[in-house]
Length: 92
Image (tube, rainbow, N blue to C red; front, side, top):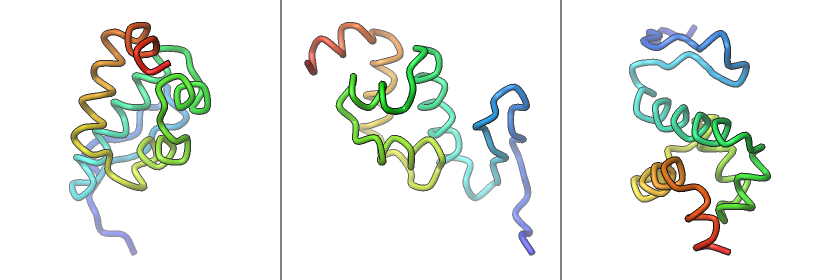
């Protein structure tokens, strides 16, 4: 039986969102920011991965909180959120 307490419930308007437990808060917040950045740009996982040169499996694992995105990746995602065209041009 899972005794981890949910501290952030899933967003009912986001079918890919999930409950976040105390233990998974950091990983969950990172996953949410990555997914919101990607969906805010209107890109599928495959499109985002291709455009910004991130392995699609890695992106999927980060978004599903299977693994924790490292600090450098979070910085990259924040830059993408602010300047998506500039980043896409820089990595092309």
